[in-house]
Amino acid sequence: MQSTTQHHSKLKTPKSSEMSVENDSPLTNIRRKRRDDGIDVLVFDHPDTSANIFDIRTLDELEKHLDEIAKDSSVKGLVFTSAKPSIFLAGADLKSLGDATGEVLREFIEKGQRVFGKVTELKVPTAAAIHGACLGGGLELALACDIRLASPDRATKIGLPETMLGIIPAWGGSTRLPKLIGLPKALNAILTGKQMAPKLAHKLGVVDEIAPNERLEDRAAELLQKELPKRKSHWLTNNPLSAFLIRKLAKKDLLKKTRGNYPAQEAAIDVVCRAPNSPTKLSLHRERDVVLKLAETRASRNLMRIFHLTEHAKKFRYSKNLDPSSVRDIERTAVIGAGIMGGGIAQWISARGYPVILSDINDEAIAKGLGNIDKIYSSAVKRRIFTEHEAKQKRDNISPIAYRVPLTSTDLVIEAAVENLEVKKKIFADLCARSRADTILA
Image 1 (tube, helix red, strand yellow):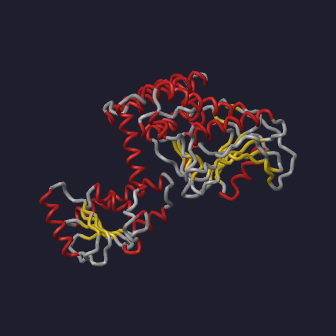
Image 2: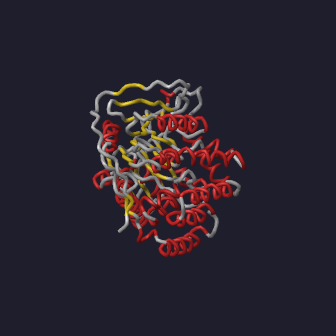
Image 3: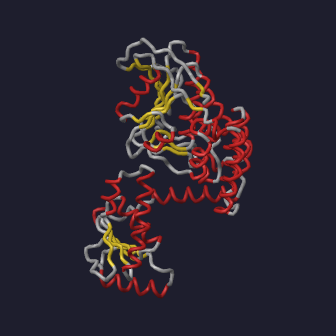
C-alpha cells in the first residue's frame, strides 16, 4: 500500500521553560512565543470575544506570523494552541461570511486558502494542539498541519459543519480531509456536519493522539522533534474508479433523503470525491467556486439565518428589571407525551443531569418512547459522546409514568402531546390543577 512519508530528524535541543518573542507590530488576536527547545507557539486569544474566530484581522495576523517564522532559521517547529478555556478555533466569522458577496467573498475565501497554504509550505514541522471547539476553519487550519493532538475533555469537539449552513468547507477542508482519512469517512463527516468527540476523531484518523490539556503543548513539541507519522494513501477508496462509484452512490442516496433541497451536500460530494485525484490547487479552486455559487442560493441564506437566530436565542436573557434571586432554579422536570419529540426532549433533559418524568396515556406509548430514547443513547455511546456507564446513569434520570401523578415538586413541565388544540387545552387545564402556581408550563 502506498504511503506519503515526511522525515524530520530528532532535535537535540533540550526542553525547558518558555520565553517570549517580541513582535514590533501591534498583533492582538494571536501571540507568538518561543520555547527553550526552539519550538514556536502561536496562541489564539481573540480579546473581544469569548470565542476565537477567523475574521480578516486574525487571518492578517496569522499570515504575518507565518511569514516571520518562514524567514527565521532558528525556529525548529510550530505549535498552534488557544488561550480560551473551551474554544480552540470556532471557524470563520459567520457574520462577515453571511454578509459578504461577490468579490468580497471571493477575496475572503482565497485569503484563507492562501494563509493555510503557507502553513503547509513551512519548512519546519507543525502541530495543532486542540482543546475546546475546533470547528470549520479551525479544523481546516489543523488539517494544514503535519500533526494534530486533542484533549479528551468534553469541551473538545471537532468537525466541519459548513454544509449545515448551506456551504462547504472551502479553506482546504474538502481537499485535505479525504486525503487524510479516506473518501467514505471524509464524505460522511462533511455531509452530516456532525461534531466529533476526541476519541472518535482519533479513531477516524483526524487527530493523531489524545493528550491531557495540561500536557498538550509539551506533547506536541515532543512529537515535532521526532519523525513525522507515515500517512496511508487510502488507495483502495481514493483511486479514480472507487471515487467515481462512491460519488455516484452518494448522490443517489442523498437525493432520496433531501429531494434536491440541500444543494450544499450535493456540491460537497462533487468536490470531495474529486479531491484525492486532483492537484491541491485545482481542488481549492473548486472549493472556492462552489461556495461563491452556494452563497447566492436561497437555501444557504435561510440556513445562515436559522443559525444566527439560534445563536441569538442561546444568548437571550430575561429582563434586567427581573430580580434573578426571585426566579426558582429548575431542578425537577416533566415531559407530557412520549412520542418522537417528547422522548427526544426527555432524553436531552436527562443527558444534562436533570430528573425528568416522562408521561403518556398508556404503557405501550411509554415503552415506545423509552425505546427511542435508548436508541439515542446507544448512538451516543457508539459515537463516543458518552461511555456506557455515563449513558446508563443519564438514562436513569428518566421516570416513565403512564398514569396521573401530582406534579407539585416539579419546576418545569413541557407538553409534547398530539398537535390538537382541544387536546392541548385539556392537558394544560389538568397540568394547572396538578402543579404549583410557580411551576413553568411550556
